[in-house]
Image 1 (cartoon, helix red, strand yellow):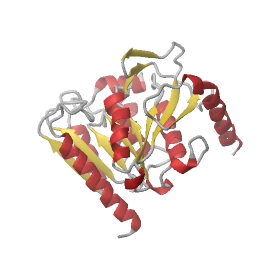
Image 2: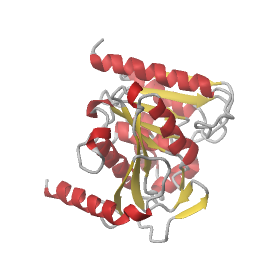
Image 3: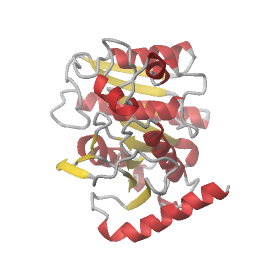
Image 4: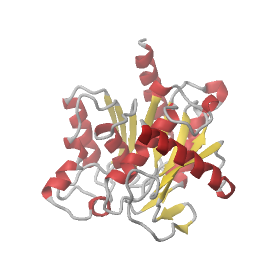
Length: 300
């Protein structure tokens, strides 16, 4: 209990001291969760964060959460923490982050974009950032305006690419489980010929069969893993779509509600870009699936 109170107090101090330099992405509120000095673990990065190009942030060593509340007239009480991708070396904060959050908010889903710390070979680091983000959005710890939060039992997680791996880690290994998960072309497995090697190299550093297996998340699904929607492209040459299908099969083997959409083209990394031919289709799939999840929670 003392540890949690200390973390919450450090988080609030960090938020207050940094408010003047918070970038404006259209969010209603921002929480600086913690940095390497106040977090449970450090990623060991001491060099300054770098925005290599607009909305591409590398060497992240300070976790932040950006809140985009649901449009009031459409609010369902649901919420999502969004984990952008970037191969565990950088974050694509626009089309897999802020723009995605605005779309969710327009659909009545409160969204919070997580700028998580790069693992730098410390896989526990991004996971603890995702866990704390879920606590914040659920209102379990202070930091976000309570009146803007969704219902705690309806908070899920969204992830793209390596952010999909992080969202799946929270769903399988995390101490704080989301109510549901939505995974866009996720990194899942370290299986030879199917792994996105760069993501696993950045996550783990030293690669051994045991470490690869521990973070191949199709192996970590249990009956406690939340319902999951997967959205893939058949022609993805960066992260083979078998990453997603492996995870889907593991979910079904454990009796977990899941849905899988594989689009015939689009490659990798499309997020909410309007250049993706099937954007309207995935948006419909997401809204319909979330409506089903809402009905299930209500017992309808």
